[in-house]
Image (cartoon, rainbow, N blue to C red):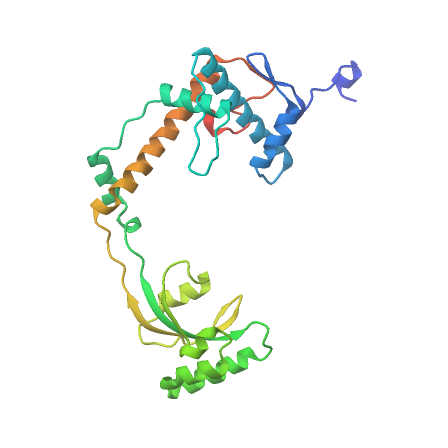
Length: 274
């Protein structure tokens, strides 16, 4: 028997059951339970901790907005959705108290030069294929026979596609047209990346749809996008990154001044207080 139990004292409740207060204001357990749906996690306790942190941060911001007399002016978007009064208070507080600089030309150009691969149009591939569906029991044997025939008569690809392919493209010589990233499954894209133009893949390419006999007719290399075209996108990304950092620092200041009971924000793993 533990010393605590022997003395008749109740063991400390787990963190998830403690009453959480922010400057004396209780965060209701029902609110925490409802908030957990927005914080998926492998374990329910982790979701509850994340929800608790989010509500503590929200309460910190609302208390500060009210202390400073920030007016609540709910905004609406183009689809008719309207902010709640609390959302408007938090937005107004952040807009007033968290000032961040605009990304200048030099910063944007430096990011562009350091990340050129991100600012390149994707490669395109002109492809034909013959699909032998996953539910066809003898697909491997049929694929081997088709590849053997194409090895001696590659010009019969369209005829073989019409005869064997389960894809509607079989009616157009197996042509899939121009394919860009994300338009096919990863296994198919990986096979295309390894192929030489004018070649037929030496083995069937297996995907969840079945086996594919693949011919690569043309590869259109991507091109670097000019800085002027992507400058706005870079500036928006840099400014949002700085803004998030500034908000996190502002929350750290509010948390440091507040009396928070029932949860240790740093121990809970909150990135907002690290």
